[in-house]
Length: 516
Length: 115
Image (cartoon, rainbow over the protein chains, first blue to last red):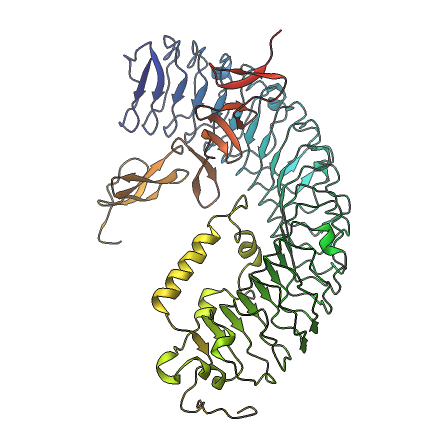
Protein backbone atom coordinates (compact mmCIF):
# COMPACT_ATOMS: atom_id res chain seq x y z
CA UNK A 1 0.00 0.00 0.00
CA UNK A 2 1.12 3.53 -0.69
CA UNK A 3 1.39 6.58 1.56
CA UNK A 4 1.18 9.82 -0.46
CA UNK A 5 2.07 13.22 1.05
CA UNK A 6 1.05 16.15 -1.13
CA UNK A 7 0.72 18.64 1.72
CA UNK A 8 1.81 22.25 1.35
CA UNK A 9 2.44 22.10 -2.41
CA UNK A 10 0.24 25.03 -3.37
CA UNK A 11 -2.15 22.67 -5.20
CA UNK A 12 -5.47 24.15 -6.34
CA UNK A 13 -7.01 20.77 -7.21
CA UNK A 14 -6.62 17.08 -6.40
CA UNK A 15 -3.89 15.50 -8.56
CA UNK A 16 -5.37 13.28 -11.24
CA UNK A 17 -2.96 10.33 -11.38
CA UNK A 18 -3.19 9.00 -7.83
CA UNK A 19 -2.56 5.25 -7.51
CA UNK A 20 -5.49 2.94 -6.64
CA UNK A 21 -3.17 1.36 -4.05
CA UNK A 22 -3.01 4.57 -2.01
CA UNK A 23 -3.88 3.91 1.65
CA UNK A 24 -2.90 7.34 3.05
CA UNK A 25 -3.34 10.61 1.16
CA UNK A 26 -2.37 13.99 2.64
CA UNK A 27 -3.59 16.99 0.66
CA UNK A 28 -3.61 19.34 3.63
CA UNK A 29 -2.49 22.97 3.64
CA UNK A 30 -3.01 23.56 -0.10
CA UNK A 31 -5.40 25.89 -1.98
CA UNK A 32 -8.00 23.35 -3.07
CA UNK A 33 -11.37 25.11 -3.24
CA UNK A 34 -13.40 22.46 -5.04
CA UNK A 35 -13.72 18.67 -5.22
CA UNK A 36 -15.04 16.94 -8.29
CA UNK A 37 -17.57 14.08 -7.98
CA UNK A 38 -15.96 10.61 -7.91
CA UNK A 39 -12.43 12.09 -7.52
CA UNK A 40 -11.40 9.23 -5.25
CA UNK A 41 -13.74 6.57 -6.69
CA UNK A 42 -10.87 4.24 -7.70
CA UNK A 43 -9.13 4.35 -4.32
CA UNK A 44 -10.77 1.34 -2.64
CA UNK A 45 -7.95 0.98 -0.09
CA UNK A 46 -7.79 4.59 1.05
CA UNK A 47 -7.89 4.54 4.84
CA UNK A 48 -6.98 8.13 5.66
CA UNK A 49 -7.74 11.26 3.63
CA UNK A 50 -6.48 14.65 4.78
CA UNK A 51 -8.03 17.69 3.17
CA UNK A 52 -7.56 20.04 6.12
CA UNK A 53 -6.27 23.57 5.67
CA UNK A 54 -7.72 24.17 2.20
CA UNK A 55 -10.39 26.52 0.83
CA UNK A 56 -13.32 24.12 0.54
CA UNK A 57 -16.65 25.97 1.00
CA UNK A 58 -18.85 23.14 -0.28
CA UNK A 59 -18.42 19.41 -1.08
CA UNK A 60 -20.52 17.74 -3.82
CA UNK A 61 -22.56 14.63 -3.01
CA UNK A 62 -20.36 12.17 -4.93
CA UNK A 63 -16.99 13.53 -3.81
CA UNK A 64 -16.20 10.60 -1.50
CA UNK A 65 -18.12 7.85 -3.26
CA UNK A 66 -16.31 4.52 -3.42
CA UNK A 67 -14.22 5.11 -0.29
CA UNK A 68 -15.41 1.97 1.49
CA UNK A 69 -12.19 1.55 3.45
CA UNK A 70 -11.97 5.14 4.64
CA UNK A 71 -11.49 5.36 8.41
CA UNK A 72 -10.19 8.88 8.92
CA UNK A 73 -11.44 11.98 7.06
CA UNK A 74 -9.95 15.38 7.91
CA UNK A 75 -11.83 18.45 6.71
CA UNK A 76 -10.86 20.89 9.46
CA UNK A 77 -9.65 24.42 8.70
CA UNK A 78 -11.78 24.92 5.59
CA UNK A 79 -14.66 27.28 4.76
CA UNK A 80 -17.65 24.92 5.07
CA UNK A 81 -20.90 26.60 6.25
CA UNK A 82 -22.94 23.45 6.55
CA UNK A 83 -22.24 19.74 7.07
CA UNK A 84 -21.75 18.16 3.63
CA UNK A 85 -24.42 15.55 4.42
CA UNK A 86 -24.74 14.17 0.89
CA UNK A 87 -20.99 13.57 0.63
CA UNK A 88 -20.97 11.65 3.92
CA UNK A 89 -23.84 9.37 2.92
CA UNK A 90 -21.93 6.16 2.27
CA UNK A 91 -18.76 5.78 4.34
CA UNK A 92 -19.49 2.58 6.25
CA UNK A 93 -16.09 2.29 7.93
CA UNK A 94 -15.45 5.93 8.79
CA UNK A 95 -14.37 6.23 12.45
CA UNK A 96 -12.93 9.72 12.75
CA UNK A 97 -14.43 12.82 11.14
CA UNK A 98 -12.86 16.23 11.63
CA UNK A 99 -14.97 19.25 10.81
CA UNK A 100 -13.46 21.64 13.36
CA UNK A 101 -12.40 25.19 12.47
CA UNK A 102 -14.94 25.72 9.70
CA UNK A 103 -17.92 28.12 9.58
CA UNK A 104 -20.63 25.50 10.14
CA UNK A 105 -23.90 26.85 11.44
CA UNK A 106 -26.21 24.26 9.83
CA UNK A 107 -26.28 20.53 10.63
CA UNK A 108 -28.95 18.83 8.51
CA UNK A 109 -30.92 16.08 10.26
CA UNK A 110 -29.49 13.27 8.12
CA UNK A 111 -25.88 14.53 8.25
CA UNK A 112 -24.42 11.42 9.85
CA UNK A 113 -26.86 8.70 8.75
CA UNK A 114 -24.30 7.06 6.48
CA UNK A 115 -21.69 6.74 9.24
CA UNK A 116 -22.59 3.69 11.34
CA UNK A 117 -19.01 3.23 12.55
CA UNK A 118 -18.27 6.85 13.51
CA UNK A 119 -16.48 7.04 16.86
CA UNK A 120 -14.80 10.46 16.99
CA UNK A 121 -16.42 13.71 15.84
CA UNK A 122 -14.85 17.19 15.92
CA UNK A 123 -17.23 20.10 15.46
CA UNK A 124 -15.41 22.61 17.64
CA UNK A 125 -14.60 26.14 16.54
CA UNK A 126 -17.61 26.59 14.28
CA UNK A 127 -20.75 28.76 14.33
CA UNK A 128 -23.32 26.43 15.91
CA UNK A 129 -25.94 28.19 18.00
CA UNK A 130 -27.69 25.04 19.18
CA UNK A 131 -27.02 21.35 19.81
CA UNK A 132 -27.74 19.45 16.55
CA UNK A 133 -30.06 17.06 18.39
CA UNK A 134 -31.67 15.38 15.37
CA UNK A 135 -28.38 14.76 13.59
CA UNK A 136 -26.87 13.26 16.74
CA UNK A 137 -29.69 10.73 16.97
CA UNK A 138 -28.02 8.42 14.42
CA UNK A 139 -24.56 7.79 15.93
CA UNK A 140 -24.72 4.57 17.98
CA UNK A 141 -20.93 4.03 17.90
CA UNK A 142 -19.89 7.60 18.79
CA UNK A 143 -17.41 7.64 21.71
CA UNK A 144 -15.89 11.12 21.68
CA UNK A 145 -17.26 14.45 20.50
CA UNK A 146 -16.31 18.11 20.84
CA UNK A 147 -18.72 20.96 20.27
CA UNK A 148 -16.42 23.45 22.03
CA UNK A 149 -15.89 27.02 20.80
CA UNK A 150 -19.32 27.52 19.30
CA UNK A 151 -22.19 29.84 20.33
CA UNK A 152 -24.49 27.26 21.91
CA UNK A 153 -26.69 28.87 24.57
CA UNK A 154 -28.86 26.04 25.85
CA UNK A 155 -28.84 22.27 26.22
CA UNK A 156 -32.38 20.94 25.82
CA UNK A 157 -33.75 17.82 27.48
CA UNK A 158 -32.74 14.57 25.78
CA UNK A 159 -30.16 16.41 23.60
CA UNK A 160 -27.86 13.36 23.50
CA UNK A 161 -30.34 10.59 24.25
CA UNK A 162 -29.06 8.04 21.70
CA UNK A 163 -25.37 8.51 22.37
CA UNK A 164 -25.11 5.57 24.73
CA UNK A 165 -21.47 4.87 23.79
CA UNK A 166 -20.26 8.45 24.28
CA UNK A 167 -17.31 8.59 26.70
CA UNK A 168 -16.01 12.14 26.18
CA UNK A 169 -18.12 15.28 25.59
CA UNK A 170 -16.50 18.71 25.32
CA UNK A 171 -18.71 21.79 25.41
CA UNK A 172 -16.24 24.35 26.73
CA UNK A 173 -16.16 27.96 25.48
CA UNK A 174 -19.79 28.20 24.46
CA UNK A 175 -22.53 30.50 25.87
CA UNK A 176 -24.50 27.86 27.73
CA UNK A 177 -26.71 29.58 30.27
CA UNK A 178 -29.30 26.90 30.91
CA UNK A 179 -29.55 23.14 30.86
CA UNK A 180 -32.64 20.93 30.84
CA UNK A 181 -32.85 18.75 33.94
CA UNK A 182 -32.81 15.77 31.55
CA UNK A 183 -30.21 17.30 29.30
CA UNK A 184 -27.73 14.43 29.69
CA UNK A 185 -30.26 11.58 29.71
CA UNK A 186 -28.99 8.63 27.69
CA UNK A 187 -25.24 9.25 28.14
CA UNK A 188 -24.75 5.97 30.03
CA UNK A 189 -21.04 5.67 29.21
CA UNK A 190 -19.94 9.29 29.72
CA UNK A 191 -16.70 9.63 31.71
CA UNK A 192 -15.54 13.16 30.83
CA UNK A 193 -17.78 16.23 30.64
CA UNK A 194 -16.25 19.66 29.99
CA UNK A 195 -18.58 22.62 30.57
CA UNK A 196 -15.79 25.11 31.34
CA UNK A 197 -15.98 28.73 30.17
CA UNK A 198 -19.72 28.98 29.74
CA UNK A 199 -22.42 31.19 31.36
CA UNK A 200 -24.20 28.66 33.55
CA UNK A 201 -26.14 30.39 36.33
CA UNK A 202 -27.25 27.25 38.14
CA UNK A 203 -25.41 24.08 39.10
CA UNK A 204 -25.99 21.56 36.24
CA UNK A 205 -28.24 19.11 38.12
CA UNK A 206 -28.64 17.20 34.85
CA UNK A 207 -25.35 15.46 35.64
CA UNK A 208 -27.14 13.27 38.17
CA UNK A 209 -27.87 10.71 35.39
CA UNK A 210 -24.14 10.31 34.55
CA UNK A 211 -23.32 7.28 36.66
CA UNK A 212 -19.90 6.65 35.09
CA UNK A 213 -18.65 10.25 35.19
CA UNK A 214 -14.99 10.56 36.27
CA UNK A 215 -13.92 14.03 35.13
CA UNK A 216 -16.23 17.02 35.47
CA UNK A 217 -15.30 20.62 34.67
CA UNK A 218 -17.50 23.68 35.01
CA UNK A 219 -14.91 26.24 35.98
CA UNK A 220 -15.35 29.84 34.80
CA UNK A 221 -19.13 29.98 34.83
CA UNK A 222 -21.55 32.09 36.94
CA UNK A 223 -22.64 29.47 39.46
CA UNK A 224 -23.29 30.77 42.98
CA UNK A 225 -24.20 27.59 44.83
CA UNK A 226 -23.46 23.88 44.78
CA UNK A 227 -26.49 22.20 46.36
CA UNK A 228 -26.67 19.27 48.71
CA UNK A 229 -26.63 15.89 46.89
CA UNK A 230 -25.14 17.63 43.84
CA UNK A 231 -22.98 14.59 43.00
CA UNK A 232 -25.14 11.85 44.44
CA UNK A 233 -25.39 10.28 40.98
CA UNK A 234 -21.66 10.38 40.26
CA UNK A 235 -19.85 8.01 42.66
CA UNK A 236 -16.89 7.53 40.29
CA UNK A 237 -15.88 11.21 40.13
CA UNK A 238 -12.09 11.68 40.32
CA UNK A 239 -11.73 15.37 39.45
CA UNK A 240 -14.15 18.28 39.71
CA UNK A 241 -12.93 21.68 38.51
CA UNK A 242 -15.17 24.61 39.41
CA UNK A 243 -12.86 27.54 40.22
CA UNK A 244 -13.72 30.83 38.59
CA UNK A 245 -17.32 30.75 39.80
CA UNK A 246 -18.82 33.23 42.31
CA UNK A 247 -19.68 30.30 44.60
CA UNK A 248 -21.06 31.49 47.90
CA UNK A 249 -22.81 28.39 49.20
CA UNK A 250 -21.88 24.72 49.25
CA UNK A 251 -24.03 22.10 50.93
CA UNK A 252 -22.58 20.59 54.11
CA UNK A 253 -22.68 17.07 52.62
CA UNK A 254 -22.26 17.98 48.96
CA UNK A 255 -18.92 16.22 48.63
CA UNK A 256 -19.77 13.11 50.60
CA UNK A 257 -19.35 9.56 49.22
CA UNK A 258 -17.00 10.37 46.37
CA UNK A 259 -14.44 7.61 47.07
CA UNK A 260 -12.36 8.35 43.95
CA UNK A 261 -12.15 12.13 44.32
CA UNK A 262 -8.55 13.22 44.88
CA UNK A 263 -8.73 17.00 44.60
CA UNK A 264 -11.24 19.48 45.99
CA UNK A 265 -10.63 23.20 45.57
CA UNK A 266 -12.95 25.90 46.86
CA UNK A 267 -11.86 29.54 47.10
CA UNK A 268 -13.92 32.45 48.34
CA UNK A 269 -17.15 30.64 49.17
CA UNK A 270 -17.88 33.12 51.95
CA UNK A 271 -21.19 31.51 52.95
CA UNK A 272 -19.43 28.34 54.05
CA UNK A 273 -19.40 28.47 57.83
CA UNK A 274 -18.65 24.88 58.63
CA UNK A 275 -16.02 22.45 57.47
CA UNK A 276 -17.69 20.12 54.93
CA UNK A 277 -18.68 16.61 55.95
CA UNK A 278 -16.48 14.43 53.71
CA UNK A 279 -17.70 11.03 54.89
CA UNK A 280 -16.89 8.39 52.25
CA UNK A 281 -14.56 10.66 50.25
CA UNK A 282 -11.56 8.73 51.42
CA UNK A 283 -9.13 9.25 48.52
CA UNK A 284 -8.92 13.02 48.86
CA UNK A 285 -5.30 14.13 48.58
CA UNK A 286 -5.60 17.88 48.03
CA UNK A 287 -8.18 19.94 49.92
CA UNK A 288 -8.20 23.69 49.36
CA UNK A 289 -10.87 25.62 51.20
CA UNK A 290 -9.76 29.22 51.44
CA UNK A 291 -11.43 32.58 52.05
CA UNK A 292 -14.54 31.07 53.59
CA UNK A 293 -15.95 31.52 57.08
CA UNK A 294 -14.79 28.31 58.75
CA UNK A 295 -14.08 28.77 62.43
CA UNK A 296 -13.91 25.16 63.63
CA UNK A 297 -12.22 22.01 62.33
CA UNK A 298 -13.95 18.77 63.33
CA UNK A 299 -11.94 16.51 65.65
CA UNK A 300 -12.62 13.49 63.43
CA UNK A 301 -11.54 15.33 60.30
CA UNK A 302 -8.49 13.15 59.63
CA UNK A 303 -10.46 9.95 60.07
CA UNK A 304 -12.45 10.96 56.97
CA UNK A 305 -9.30 12.01 55.07
CA UNK A 306 -6.56 9.36 55.57
CA UNK A 307 -4.98 10.09 52.15
CA UNK A 308 -4.70 13.86 52.60
CA UNK A 309 -1.37 15.34 51.42
CA UNK A 310 -2.16 19.05 51.07
CA UNK A 311 -4.49 20.94 53.39
CA UNK A 312 -4.90 24.59 52.42
CA UNK A 313 -7.26 26.48 54.79
CA UNK A 314 -5.89 30.01 54.61
CA UNK A 315 -8.09 33.07 55.13
CA UNK A 316 -10.68 31.51 57.41
CA UNK A 317 -11.52 32.15 61.10
CA UNK A 318 -10.07 29.03 62.68
CA UNK A 319 -9.20 29.55 66.33
CA UNK A 320 -8.41 26.09 67.58
CA UNK A 321 -6.65 23.23 65.77
CA UNK A 322 -7.56 19.58 66.26
CA UNK A 323 -4.86 16.95 66.30
CA UNK A 324 -3.85 16.13 62.72
CA UNK A 325 -2.03 12.97 63.77
CA UNK A 326 -4.36 10.67 61.79
CA UNK A 327 -3.58 12.57 58.59
CA UNK A 328 -0.45 10.44 58.30
CA UNK A 329 0.38 11.42 54.68
CA UNK A 330 0.09 15.14 55.22
CA UNK A 331 2.95 16.99 53.48
CA UNK A 332 1.80 20.59 53.45
CA UNK A 333 -0.47 22.60 55.77
CA UNK A 334 -1.55 26.15 54.94
CA UNK A 335 -3.30 27.89 57.82
CA UNK A 336 -2.16 31.46 57.22
CA UNK A 337 -4.58 34.28 57.97
CA UNK A 338 -6.63 32.55 60.63
CA UNK A 339 -7.05 33.13 64.44
CA UNK A 340 -5.11 30.23 65.84
CA UNK A 341 -3.85 30.97 69.38
CA UNK A 342 -1.78 27.98 70.36
CA UNK A 343 -0.06 24.86 69.06
CA UNK A 344 -0.35 21.88 71.39
CA UNK A 345 1.96 18.90 71.67
CA UNK A 346 -0.39 16.67 69.67
CA UNK A 347 -1.43 19.21 67.02
CA UNK A 348 1.10 18.00 64.47
CA UNK A 349 2.10 14.80 66.26
CA UNK A 350 3.45 11.84 64.24
CA UNK A 351 3.25 13.63 60.87
CA UNK A 352 6.44 12.11 59.45
CA UNK A 353 5.84 13.34 55.90
CA UNK A 354 5.03 16.95 56.82
CA UNK A 355 7.41 19.24 54.93
CA UNK A 356 5.81 22.66 55.15
CA UNK A 357 3.65 24.52 57.72
CA UNK A 358 2.37 28.02 57.10
CA UNK A 359 0.90 29.55 60.26
CA UNK A 360 1.62 33.18 59.38
CA UNK A 361 -0.82 35.92 60.33
CA UNK A 362 -2.44 34.16 63.27
CA UNK A 363 -2.52 35.00 67.00
CA UNK A 364 -0.18 32.26 68.26
CA UNK A 365 1.22 33.12 71.67
CA UNK A 366 2.16 29.62 72.83
CA UNK A 367 3.81 26.61 71.12
CA UNK A 368 4.22 23.49 73.22
CA UNK A 369 7.91 22.49 73.58
CA UNK A 370 7.19 19.12 71.95
CA UNK A 371 4.99 20.47 69.14
CA UNK A 372 7.58 19.83 66.38
CA UNK A 373 9.53 16.95 67.92
CA UNK A 374 8.23 14.21 65.58
CA UNK A 375 8.30 16.25 62.35
CA UNK A 376 11.40 14.66 60.80
CA UNK A 377 10.64 15.93 57.28
CA UNK A 378 9.84 19.53 58.17
CA UNK A 379 11.87 21.97 56.08
CA UNK A 380 9.67 25.09 55.90
CA UNK A 381 7.99 26.84 58.83
CA UNK A 382 6.31 30.23 58.54
CA UNK A 383 5.27 31.92 61.78
CA UNK A 384 5.31 35.50 60.50
CA UNK A 385 3.08 37.97 62.33
CA UNK A 386 2.06 36.13 65.46
CA UNK A 387 2.50 36.83 69.19
CA UNK A 388 5.38 34.50 69.98
CA UNK A 389 7.62 35.11 72.98
CA UNK A 390 9.70 32.01 72.51
CA UNK A 391 10.20 29.31 69.86
CA UNK A 392 10.71 25.65 70.89
CA UNK A 393 13.64 24.36 68.86
CA UNK A 394 13.23 20.58 69.36
CA UNK A 395 12.46 18.99 65.99
CA UNK A 396 13.41 22.03 63.91
CA UNK A 397 16.93 20.87 63.07
CA UNK A 398 15.98 20.05 59.51
CA UNK A 399 14.59 23.48 58.67
CA UNK A 400 15.91 25.19 55.54
CA UNK A 401 13.38 28.06 55.59
CA UNK A 402 12.11 29.77 58.74
CA UNK A 403 10.07 33.00 58.91
CA UNK A 404 9.58 34.70 62.27
CA UNK A 405 9.23 38.40 61.42
CA UNK A 406 6.36 40.24 63.04
CA UNK A 407 6.83 38.65 66.48
CA UNK A 408 8.11 41.69 68.42
CA UNK A 409 8.36 39.82 71.74
CA UNK A 410 10.56 37.09 70.24
CA UNK A 411 13.93 38.60 71.09
CA UNK A 412 15.99 35.54 71.99
CA UNK A 413 19.15 35.15 69.89
CA UNK A 414 19.59 31.92 67.93
CA UNK A 415 22.70 29.80 67.66
CA UNK A 416 24.04 28.37 64.42
CA UNK A 417 23.73 24.88 65.84
CA UNK A 418 19.97 25.25 66.23
CA UNK A 419 19.46 25.21 62.44
CA UNK A 420 22.38 23.37 60.77
CA UNK A 421 20.60 23.21 57.38
CA UNK A 422 19.16 26.71 57.38
CA UNK A 423 19.37 28.62 54.10
CA UNK A 424 16.74 31.34 54.33
CA UNK A 425 15.94 32.88 57.73
CA UNK A 426 13.71 35.84 58.55
CA UNK A 427 13.86 37.05 62.15
CA UNK A 428 12.32 39.93 64.07
CA UNK A 429 15.64 41.74 64.75
CA UNK A 430 18.87 42.22 62.80
CA UNK A 431 21.06 41.17 65.71
CA UNK A 432 19.50 37.71 65.53
CA UNK A 433 21.21 37.31 62.16
CA UNK A 434 24.64 37.83 63.69
CA UNK A 435 24.75 34.23 64.89
CA UNK A 436 25.50 33.30 61.30
CA UNK A 437 29.10 34.62 61.11
CA UNK A 438 30.57 38.13 60.65
CA UNK A 439 27.83 40.53 59.86
CA UNK A 440 29.08 42.48 56.83
CA UNK A 441 30.36 40.10 54.19
CA UNK A 442 28.15 37.16 54.84
CA UNK A 443 24.76 38.61 54.38
CA UNK A 444 23.03 39.61 51.24
CA UNK A 445 20.09 41.95 51.03
CA UNK A 446 17.65 39.58 49.52
CA UNK A 447 14.05 39.24 49.06
CA UNK A 448 14.97 35.77 47.81
CA UNK A 449 12.19 34.19 49.65
CA UNK A 450 9.64 36.67 48.32
CA UNK A 451 10.85 36.11 44.73
CA UNK A 452 11.07 32.40 45.22
CA UNK A 453 7.95 31.61 47.25
CA UNK A 454 5.00 33.47 45.77
CA UNK A 455 2.93 35.38 48.32
CA UNK A 456 -0.49 33.68 48.67
CA UNK A 457 -2.14 37.10 48.72
CA UNK A 458 -1.31 37.97 45.17
CA UNK A 459 -1.39 34.71 43.25
CA UNK A 460 -4.22 32.34 42.35
CA UNK A 461 -4.08 29.78 45.17
CA UNK A 462 -5.86 27.20 43.03
CA UNK A 463 -3.06 27.18 40.44
CA UNK A 464 -0.38 27.02 43.10
CA UNK A 465 -2.11 24.14 44.91
CA UNK A 466 -3.32 22.22 41.83
CA UNK A 467 -0.06 22.70 40.00
CA UNK A 468 1.86 21.73 43.09
CA UNK A 469 1.82 17.97 42.60
CA UNK A 470 3.09 16.15 39.48
CA UNK A 471 0.50 13.43 39.68
CA UNK A 472 -2.36 15.83 39.14
CA UNK A 473 -4.16 15.40 35.75
CA UNK A 474 -3.86 18.87 34.34
CA UNK A 475 -0.62 20.02 36.01
CA UNK A 476 1.73 21.80 33.53
CA UNK A 477 5.08 21.55 35.47
CA UNK A 478 6.71 19.12 37.82
CA UNK A 479 7.30 20.14 41.48
CA UNK A 480 10.45 18.01 41.69
CA UNK A 481 11.96 19.95 38.79
CA UNK A 482 10.99 23.21 40.49
CA UNK A 483 12.63 22.16 43.75
CA UNK A 484 15.67 20.91 41.90
CA UNK A 485 16.10 24.28 40.15
CA UNK A 486 15.62 26.04 43.48
CA UNK A 487 18.37 23.87 44.99
CA UNK A 488 20.61 24.53 42.03
CA UNK A 489 20.13 28.30 42.26
CA UNK A 490 20.52 28.20 46.02
CA UNK A 491 23.72 26.24 45.95
CA UNK A 492 25.28 28.15 43.07
CA UNK A 493 24.36 31.72 43.88
CA UNK A 494 23.82 31.68 47.59
CA UNK A 495 26.33 29.37 49.26
CA UNK A 496 25.69 31.31 52.47
CA UNK A 497 22.60 31.70 54.66
CA UNK A 498 20.33 34.57 53.75
CA UNK A 499 19.23 36.15 56.98
CA UNK A 500 17.02 39.27 57.10
CA UNK A 501 16.80 41.93 58.34
CA UNK A 502 20.48 42.28 57.58
CA UNK A 503 22.54 44.03 60.26
CA UNK A 504 24.12 47.32 59.25
CA UNK A 505 25.50 50.59 60.61
CA UNK A 506 22.29 51.46 62.38
CA UNK A 507 21.56 47.89 63.41
CA UNK A 508 24.88 46.79 64.86
CA UNK A 509 25.61 43.25 65.82
CA UNK A 510 26.24 43.94 69.49
CA UNK A 511 23.52 42.12 71.32
CA UNK A 512 21.21 44.65 72.90
CA UNK A 513 18.41 43.37 75.04
CA UNK A 514 14.90 44.46 74.31
CA UNK A 515 14.03 45.94 70.98
CA UNK A 516 15.52 48.93 69.09
CA UNK B 1 8.86 44.63 13.25
CA UNK B 2 11.87 42.71 14.64
CA UNK B 3 14.81 42.84 12.12
CA UNK B 4 15.05 39.03 11.91
CA UNK B 5 11.32 38.52 11.28
CA UNK B 6 10.57 38.11 7.61
CA UNK B 7 7.17 38.55 6.06
CA UNK B 8 7.32 36.06 3.19
CA UNK B 9 6.43 33.03 5.33
CA UNK B 10 5.55 29.52 4.32
CA UNK B 11 2.21 27.69 4.79
CA UNK B 12 0.30 28.68 7.88
CA UNK B 13 2.86 31.08 9.40
CA UNK B 14 1.80 34.60 10.26
CA UNK B 15 5.35 35.68 11.15
CA UNK B 16 8.57 33.74 10.85
CA UNK B 17 12.34 34.04 10.93
CA UNK B 18 14.97 32.41 8.78
CA UNK B 19 16.52 30.68 11.75
CA UNK B 20 13.45 29.69 13.84
CA UNK B 21 10.80 29.10 11.17
CA UNK B 22 7.28 30.13 12.23
CA UNK B 23 7.06 32.52 15.16
CA UNK B 24 3.28 32.79 15.06
CA UNK B 25 0.48 31.13 13.09
CA UNK B 26 -2.48 32.24 11.06
CA UNK B 27 -5.74 31.94 12.99
CA UNK B 28 -7.10 28.50 13.91
CA UNK B 29 -3.85 26.62 13.24
CA UNK B 30 -1.76 24.72 15.78
CA UNK B 31 1.71 26.04 16.60
CA UNK B 32 4.21 23.17 17.04
CA UNK B 33 7.97 23.19 17.74
CA UNK B 34 9.69 20.56 15.60
CA UNK B 35 13.18 19.44 16.53
CA UNK B 36 15.66 19.18 13.69
CA UNK B 37 19.02 18.09 15.10
CA UNK B 38 19.89 20.61 17.81
CA UNK B 39 17.54 23.25 16.36
CA UNK B 40 13.86 23.80 17.06
CA UNK B 41 11.75 25.08 14.19
CA UNK B 42 8.27 26.54 14.61
CA UNK B 43 5.63 25.11 12.25
CA UNK B 44 1.91 25.81 11.86
CA UNK B 45 -0.35 22.83 11.25
CA UNK B 46 -4.05 22.15 10.77
CA UNK B 47 -3.70 19.09 12.99
CA UNK B 48 -1.22 18.11 15.68
CA UNK B 49 1.56 15.61 14.92
CA UNK B 50 1.02 11.93 15.72
CA UNK B 51 1.28 11.28 19.45
CA UNK B 52 -0.32 14.67 20.25
CA UNK B 53 -3.88 15.93 20.45
CA UNK B 54 -5.12 19.42 19.77
CA UNK B 55 -7.23 21.61 22.00
CA UNK B 56 -8.76 24.76 20.62
CA UNK B 57 -9.24 27.83 22.81
CA UNK B 58 -10.36 31.34 21.91
CA UNK B 59 -6.84 32.73 22.05
CA UNK B 60 -4.60 29.74 21.34
CA UNK B 61 -4.62 26.27 19.80
CA UNK B 62 -2.44 23.86 21.77
CA UNK B 63 -0.90 20.46 21.03
CA UNK B 64 -0.48 18.23 24.08
CA UNK B 65 1.13 14.80 24.36
CA UNK B 66 -1.04 11.66 24.45
CA UNK B 67 -0.34 9.06 27.14
CA UNK B 68 2.75 6.89 26.75
CA UNK B 69 0.83 3.83 25.53
CA UNK B 70 -1.18 5.77 22.96
CA UNK B 71 -0.28 6.63 19.35
CA UNK B 72 -3.14 8.98 18.50
CA UNK B 73 -5.73 10.41 20.90
CA UNK B 74 -8.78 12.63 21.15
CA UNK B 75 -7.82 13.90 24.62
CA UNK B 76 -5.20 12.80 27.09
CA UNK B 77 -7.58 10.29 28.63
CA UNK B 78 -9.17 9.06 25.42
CA UNK B 79 -6.98 7.18 22.95
CA UNK B 80 -8.04 6.52 19.35
CA UNK B 81 -5.11 4.22 18.39
CA UNK B 82 -2.80 2.39 20.81
CA UNK B 83 0.89 1.70 20.41
CA UNK B 84 1.88 -1.86 19.49
CA UNK B 85 1.39 -4.37 22.25
CA UNK B 86 -1.79 -2.68 23.52
CA UNK B 87 -5.43 -3.24 22.65
CA UNK B 88 -7.87 -0.34 22.33
CA UNK B 89 -11.09 -0.48 24.28
CA UNK B 90 -13.39 2.53 24.75
CA UNK B 91 -10.55 5.01 24.60
CA UNK B 92 -8.16 3.04 26.80
CA UNK B 93 -5.04 1.01 25.93
CA UNK B 94 -5.00 -2.36 27.66
CA UNK B 95 -2.47 -5.16 27.67
CA UNK B 96 -5.32 -7.64 28.08
CA UNK B 97 -8.97 -7.31 27.17
CA UNK B 98 -11.63 -7.17 29.86
CA UNK B 99 -13.68 -10.26 30.59
CA UNK B 100 -16.30 -10.98 27.97
CA UNK B 101 -14.22 -9.45 25.16
CA UNK B 102 -11.54 -10.95 22.96
CA UNK B 103 -8.38 -9.53 21.36
CA UNK B 104 -8.51 -8.73 17.65
CA UNK B 105 -4.90 -8.82 16.47
CA UNK B 106 -5.82 -7.35 13.09
CA UNK B 107 -7.37 -4.15 14.41
CA UNK B 108 -5.54 -4.34 17.78
CA UNK B 109 -8.83 -3.80 19.58
CA UNK B 110 -10.95 -5.60 22.14
CA UNK B 111 -14.12 -6.85 20.46
CA UNK B 112 -17.19 -8.75 21.53
CA UNK B 113 -16.85 -12.51 21.46
CA UNK B 114 -18.69 -13.85 18.38
CA UNK B 115 -20.32 -17.22 19.19
